[in-house]
Amino acid sequence: MEYSKEFKEAISNFTSAEKDKLIIRLLKKDRILSHRLYFELIDPETADEKRNQMETLIKEEVLAAVKRYGRTKYFLPSIRRISAKITEHVKITTDKFGEVSLALLLVSETLKNLSKSADHYKLFIYLLNKIFRSLVLTKKLDPDYFLDLRENYKEVQQQIVQNKSLEELALHNGLFWSWLEPENIPDDIDLILKGIKAEGLLK
Image (cartoon, rainbow, N blue to C red; front, side):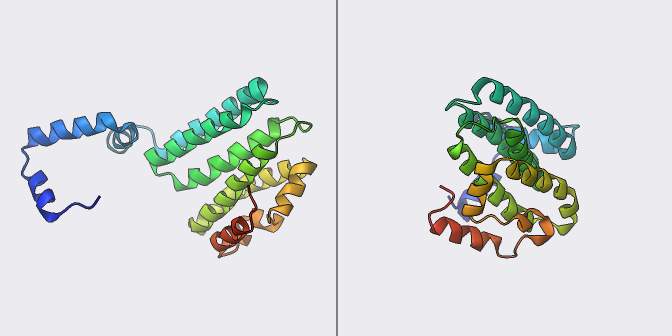
């Protein structure tokens, strides 16, 4: 929705009390916006501190999900719920680095704790999509962050090659190992990803 000049002027004519009441009403209806304003205005914790907390949460919740649902159809929805918490963290803190590092951590922790014998095709496709999205997002970051992400990508690659079926699936869906080093991600990785999906892969 676009706001007309007249609408903006009408809002600006509200009294301070009216504006305060309107803001509170809007915040009650938008939990993410409420948390984001709290973070930006008065939260004593930094984005780095909240990212560290998310790292701990991911490790704990992935392990719990594996123990409870690792061999059932409920496991992937559990991983999706953890991913949703990462998305919420990013919306609240605008932590672009964390958007990549936490997604890669989710991938590596999931693979690290997962049974190698079970059939997890849908989960693997989901994780491969996560990896490709991380590649696209990494390319948008300042190159100064690349060094900090090397270990994340290295861990993901190590977990992939330890799982033969996943390794074959990754190669079949167009993932090159060289891309798992931030400096080697192609400049047009977003277009490459579109091409891969246009061929019906990553599904």
